[in-house]
Image 1 (tube, helix red, strand yellow):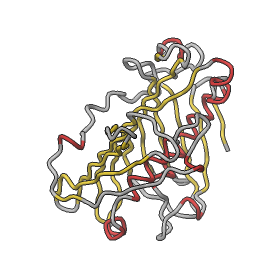
Image 2: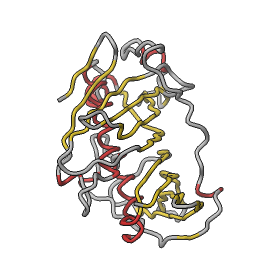
Image 3: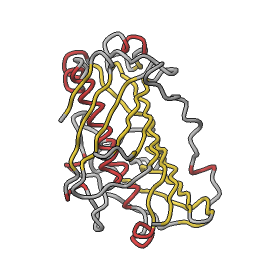
Image 4: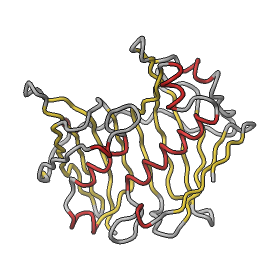
Length: 266
């Protein structure tokens, strides 16, 4: 169920975790959380006349997510319902920040997320000023709902010391990975980085925090590979740095996506 409180400028969404949203141990998957965040953001924007489909078809504009950082407090399982709340905030530089929080039905915190969005004018090939977005997508009062949108500098794969390298993973972008904008959907990138990690690591660890950045778009049948490395180890915590690259027809390489994630032992 989705509901938008226009007075508070806060949206809510209840989502049931189905078996299709879970892994082999019935834990909700990382792509499920990113998809859920994208869903509530899209529903909120659509309710205010700024949904992706209408913006693209009627205004030649589109939403683009550039960054998201999620901190987990509890990992839900099959059969549970997560209760999400979300709200937009005032512009931060050229981006439109959005906060998403989720909890269990009995009030236990599941995660909190800060994401950065840009509305791109497709005709002019440039971002729309956040102030123009706020006029149509009102933000709540900062004394009631506010989280600092500055999530710091992205920890880049190229700058990190590699303690252990994982094998390079080669996903194959396919028909069902493509979204309405005709490029690979944002959530697919998160599936690729998880798929790049060894089974034994995933069975023994769970994500505590993940910071991701979308850099370039990619398309069906592109030649993609994922690089992954352990960059920190401390007690039962492990930090993994990853990046998704595309090999172009002229043999040049394009950075598509990067991720820094903190894992803890189960």
